[in-house]
Image 1 (tube, helix red, strand yellow):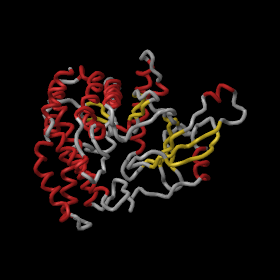
Image 2: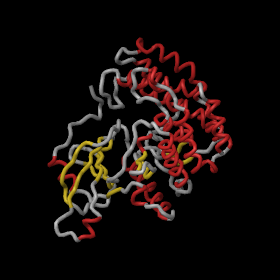
Image 3: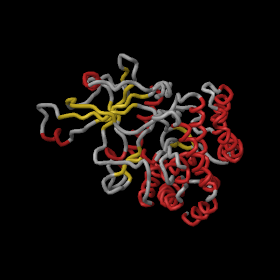
Image 4: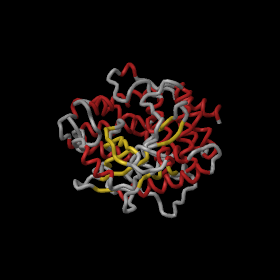
Length: 384
């Protein structure tokens, strides 16, 4: 089974032609699928230096990441790419001022088309963008070491800190409206439950009862924002741990996957990264006895995160950080279950019950985090 974004893999001739549309001073060599993202289609395009280039150009030879953006999910790709160009330009300027840092390695580089555009539309309506491939980096789908978790905290904390003074005279475009808004997600869930297009509601009654029980608690961060108790910030909003690239020494190098960079609450980034970083199991683990929220990994990530951005947070923001570790797995689980009820239209799946398995795993993780809130609060107080 597959979702609505599934397409056949483009062939070599297609990529060779697509390659020629972008402002790249190299010769196309090959393309292969890359990464494990749920939404966009990503390819590593390898190149060889163009004949006649001098030695210096050989030294500066790059490979590239080509992504076909899912325009069924991202409705306004010009707005999305405008966000990314503005954010990466700002990060590049800020990083360039930091001693010992390399902006070419520590933020994404968008390659423009030969017409100066940030994306290209192919003959089938596919929307393509290109980044320089950051070689000698790696990421983790699952974290085992608190030292690695610490580096993820450094990466996302620094990301927020560096974007704190971006010019918002023209606001960033909201690429997915109400992306982490729990009330909006609840409405979508109720709509899917009522429609029950695949007759799946009867098999998820236990999950429905769980969601209803904790929904009031899960609204606290949103309500604090609506009451003006916490500020909107420029946030990443999709801080899965594998959206941090680390160098060969396991040090944070670059934050990637910027499709959802837009206004949000700090808790969204904090909670979503810990949803993956502190999970003892993969996000689609079917044996729920293996799923728990790892407090030592929480401590590693939180120490790194607060070392970068902690002094800029308000007392109310800090007070609500532990609850974010429950909110985000609850919210993502809600989204997985909604998609399951809708017939698996949003997330790519690899087996018939994949979205249901994901939802159950997230709810188990949320419960484990909920049972440890007091320990998290104490650690944050001691760390600041």
